[in-house]
Length: 183
Image (cartoon, rainbow, N blue to C red; front, side):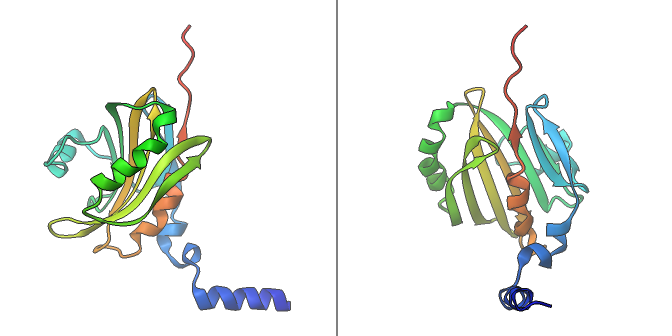
């Protein structure tokens, strides 16, 4: 083994390398297409679309998101919601501060504007307390058809303290396709 390879291996062992350390990071992902194929994302293959009756049970305090991918016990979710709130692509950046304020009751780990597959998204990583659990959220917001599109990866940290590690991989896989041209 070369000195460079040996030093690299020692450094990885010393600081840890989360992409290699958890089963979730290695979990197979499969593509999901939503909103008529306009939005696609990679999600763990074990996830399924939540039924309307389950969404009504889970999201009692607010109107449920349009689509929710979830695991069997609802501890890992990816939500999609095209809001009726107007937002042009050039207004995405200006909405970061409002999102930070709306989520200020939680612990904001990071926030900023990031380009994903050619589009700007406001990204917020936040941990929040629910009645019986700590929830990790990675929220991505952008404009689609001049409306606010929210996509959120969330998981229950109490069930799996490392569940948040796969969130960036999922969120960064988002692809938004342009509206088909009118015939």
